[in-house]
Amino acid sequence: MKEANRHWSKLSESGTVMGMKLLLAAYHIFGRFSFRVILFPVMSYYYVKNSVARQASKQYLVQIGLCTPNPEHESLSSFKHFLTFGDIILDKFLVWMGKIGREDVVFETPAILDRLDASEQGGIIVVSHLGNVEVCNALGQQLKNIRLTLLVNTEHAAKFNSLMDKAGGSPNIKVLQVKDISPATAMVLSERIEQGEYVVIASDRTPATGQGRVSSVNFLGKAALMPQGAFILGNILKCPVFLMFCLKEKGRYHIYVELFADQLKIIRQQRDTALTDIVQRYANRLQYYCLKEPLQWFNFYPFWDQTVNKEEALEK
Image (cartoon, rainbow, N blue to C red; front, side, top):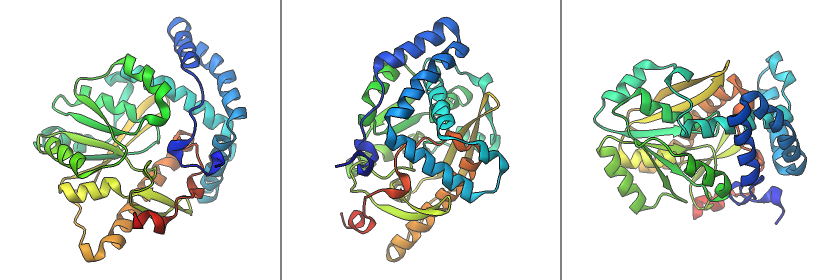
């Protein structure tokens, strides 16, 4: 199977642990400027070598340009997209090492944060591959009572995550690796939410198993498949659902948290239509934040050309 036609979770991981360690060493010894100097040839190599990621980036930026007449978007390029990705990779490590603190973060929605902190019940926080979701670690510093469970599928990025594990993290944040959400997993998450924890789940990539439910929605002016899993889970667990976006703007991270629904109520007879409407609402909000910082959405695979057939996925 050609790599361009493979599911995102099956694409080979580019780069090596040694290369990542080299970049981190450059930062520790010489600072961010030297890191960026070394980053340039590293990302140049990645840009030339990985044609799938390069073409996916170009396709995404074309959709950005078609979706809005913003003159600033005319200067966007795939190579800048790659460099932004490399720069934020460093920040991912710095977050887990405790090097990005409260002073580096701007919380744009204090009223919602107060609600998260005061509520005895937990909920679901839906995130994406936009910006630096690892900065949600800062929530643990801002909100003393909050506890997070991050749902991740990291098998496709073992080398990157081997370094992340060594970096450490907040005791209030747990990582739960899942391929799909089984009934047993749902029970575990239900217990955690009842105890006041928040489950953080990304919702802009189709399930790695290819067996989950997806909706075809309009995203940046073109039909794309997005998963229903986070919202099905919200309906089952009958808990509040929030959206969280974290963008780097003028050197600082800005965290936006929105209440998506106090409780998702999906009537069985209207299930498919209701879920598609819900996923479209999410896609609309993701698009809004992508247009704020276009170079910070990091889905380097053929997002609009996924070969997963919607009807087949729904039947599984």
